[in-house]
Image 1: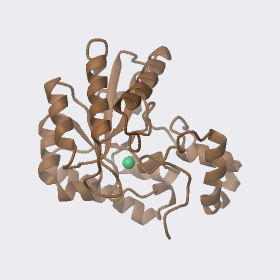
Image 2: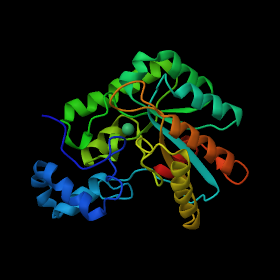
Image 3: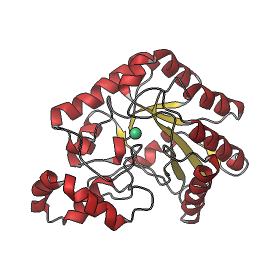
Length: 272
Ligand SMILES: [Zn+2]
């Protein structure tokens, strides 16, 4: 089967910029017909299924780690790497400010770029599982889905030499089996409470401004911030992520005096 036809952004599966939740759901319904038949017995309406599958704050399909009640903490997370074109610059910036981050790596890229994975881990950053080939796991067969997760964890553990404990589903897409399988494999599923279209936005100012709003909003709600940026692209190695890396630098400079930068293992106890 081909990829689902969804009106979502290439980077993370959010609704296209400017799209409303209603537009997202109506667009999703086209591609989710097969899944809906399965979930009709649960009494979930079409919109409910789309919401539960893709909306970060939805916990209907199982608990996921987003952010604990620690408004002083900020976790920067970087998806879709390692990317030889931009991850090194990002690591240089983080090192200059002595900030640690979490990297959700694509397994097949990690296999191609083992030295870069080792550099990420050796710098003290946390390495997480972002699947082997970045499929929509909500629409992936059970055995293939399990292989996507196990092969990635094995590769990352071999290369980086440390256990992998966190998993972020590509596009944030999930169904109960995805979360159950991840937990069976010892992985804590992670979503986010701050994301923007950094994969398609050329302005580092706009990326940083959007994420600043998310960080401030999380703080007002008494929550830590769990922020997604992209140092790679899921379609191919070498994606241009200059604006994302520059925006990350802005956020680090902006918040290093007022927030504590943490990696997700600082929150692991809150995720169980
Ligand atoms: Zn991704």
